[in-house]
Image (cartoon, protein in one colour):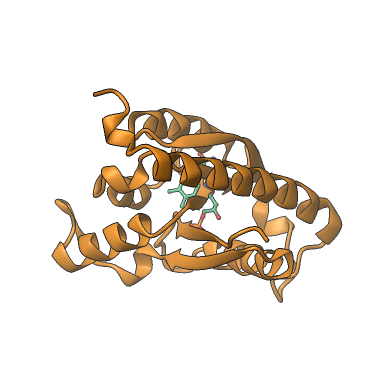
Length: 190
Ligand SMILES: Cc1cc2nc3c(=O)[nH]c(=O)nc-3n(C[C@H](O)[C@H](O)[C@H](O)COP(=O)(O)O)c2cc1C
């Protein structure tokens, strides 16, 4: 039997009235149905940030949620052709917990569906020794994709790419978990 994958689901927005919660609820319900994973949520709205980044308690909470993960799934909206500052503050507050682990994205926004934010994040995660996988779920004009109850208007069309991406994320999570168990990543280049 395949071992459960521990996924940390990272919310990329802390904005008042954010759409992130609608996207997250949809993702969480699909992951429950898919099975095979245990999901832990990292939500910047529950943390405290200043211009210097997260405070000590928040930094420790971020580190712990990243450390225990086999894989990361990031919900990222596009803000001015980039990704939100609060997401970067969370990313930058840890280093080793990202190493040799896979990252997938569900992006959303206006016309670009957040893809410009995702392309920038691929550069960021290369620097963190993380593996940003090829597949992406991108929701353009996101506010027109869900009804007032948060249900997708086209559930099958949205679900398909998410499941494909998650299966590939799980594949990478297993491969890299085995590789980390075999060789400590930091010692690979020693
Ligand atoms: C400050 C700001 C900048 C934005 N810039 C873009 C943009 O460049 N491209 C785009 O497609 N959508 C843009 N949007 C629309 C957001 O992607 C969309 O409102 C999304 O729902 C924001 O995520 P959130 O509600 O979870 O914070 C922007 C929204 C905000 C608040």
